[in-house]
Length: 195
Picture (cartoon, helix red, strand yellow):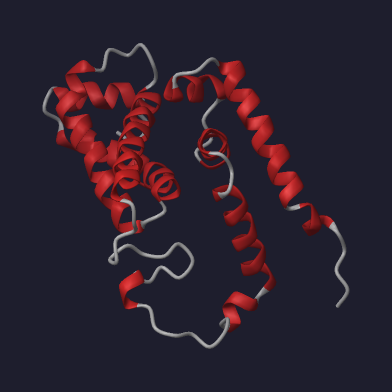
């Protein structure tokens, strides 16, 4: 069943094949969860949104007509839920004390003093990854969204266009600006460092 196209699996699920749904879940667990995690920057909330995505798929599976690929439809649902969450957070005005900090993963309300970076944080690879992650997070929302869908989820520009609802040329433009901004922000990583 794992070699069947997504659209065939969804049709089988509509006919009552729960195994087809399980295959879709397995196929998209990592990509959709990672997209949500990078969008909302909170593991717990990303888990909740991930569950919400699949609830929407269950509720709306009869609405899927095959005009777009299943993956495009799925990412559109995930994106819309992420946008709804971000809108709610704007009105909230402050972060929840239960929310995890992006860097430490620790809840804000449970933080204790820390006397310096750990050995792991000092490792060059960790520092570089952190710099790249911060640079991506600092991108304007529209550019970051396109960057994540393209680079991390591997969607084609045409698919991203369908997910975000703008022309493909606009998607390409946003990607170009994102890459230029990242190149500028991280330019010092190309320079040789003295040891």
